[in-house]
Image (cartoon, rainbow, N blue to C red; front, side, top):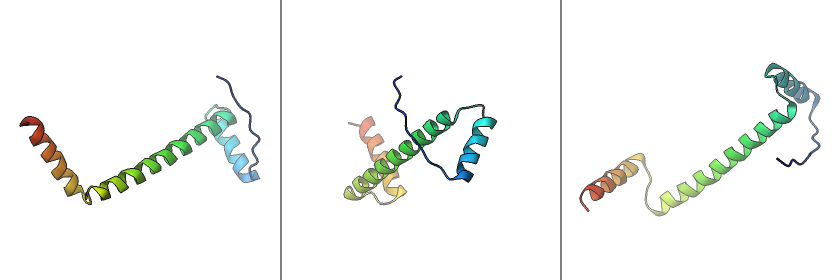
Length: 82
């Protein structure tokens, strides 16, 4: 895997905590930062998809969990009796 190197500045307290966690978990700081960045990007993507899904639901008039249940029921009935 080709890697790109970044320089990162942290406040002393945060740098200390990172070093402690790395030591406790027998991992490198780079591994911790990679994991943290992956988690951040995943969370960001999930939030983006959630916003898109919410907007689509509003467009389709889906406002409550009952609306979702009704759509699922309707889909199942139509699938069994096409």
